[in-house]
Amino acid sequence: MFVHALRVALIPVLTWLGLSIPMLFSGSVLVEYTFGWPGMGLLLLQSALSDDLPMLVACFFFFSLLVVVGNAVADALVALADPRIRAAT
Image 1: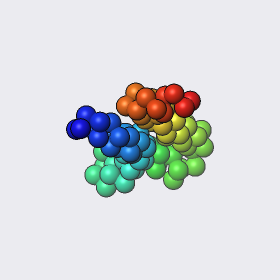
Image 2: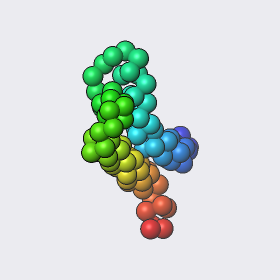
Image 3: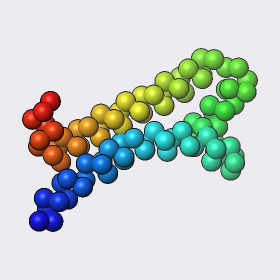
């Protein structure tokens, strides 16, 4: 019973994890600015303040790529966890 219930309960958890990966990186802007750590978030903020458009486009492209990869990984893991979803696609 535990194995069957775990597969069904795992689907929303995997979807949430796939969607939370980009949110972790986008939240780095606040953390890196607060603590002064060098990283992608601080680079994004500094390029926004200095009107560096190519760097802003590159940072937003990276964040959007994380969204696409996170969703693809979550979909693949959900398809592995539940064979009914695999058969429907």
